[in-house]
Amino acid sequence: MRDETILVVEDDNSVRDGLVMNLQLQGYKVLSACDGDEGMEMAFDSKPDLIVLDIMLPGWSGLDILAELRQQSKDTPVLLLSARDRMENKIEGLELGADDYVTKPFELPELLARIEALLRRHRGYAKNDASISFGHVTIDPVNRMVTINGNPVELSLKEFDLLLLLAKAPGRPFSRESILSSVWGWNFDGTTRTVDNFIMSLRQKIETDPSKPVHIKTVRQLGYKLEL
Image: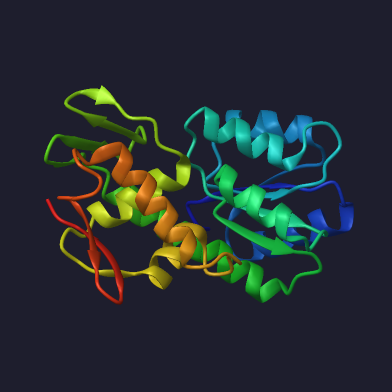
């Protein structure tokens, strides 16, 4: 039996039962909910290690549950499921803070692999939760907060994830593609321009002079790195 608990929130009985059975066969502890109201309650009360969350649910939608989790600073990994293969659904879910997105019908081995990858990444974050400081900036990974000279800075979920990624490996150059994969997920349909836009926003918020950044540096023809 693995240590992790997975919550499956899915209103389709056959899909939910199949996921529960196969996750249990993989050794996970599995909880399940058949609608958004029950899913919302269990997402907060049962403290799962990962949530497999259908978007279209009776009651609270999957996106509603995801938004509430992130507003309450819950960083539980969330893998969204949806039968709608539409770009706007993927983008909305990822911008709300989903960690991955799978369109139904899905291949079970791929879904299981993605779940394991998300849990593995989350374990890594949990082991490395000490505060990181550079210049006048302090990052608190546990509470997902950033302060400058002790004053809180408002960052979006993805801005925080991007800054934390760079700060955990100071001086290491990251390609735009690797940043997209790490922060948005390898199946994100955006472009590397997304990274440039978020870097520009981060510089506006944490650099003394965003036009002459001291910390978030451009690596020519590659991407970005963070200097302490």
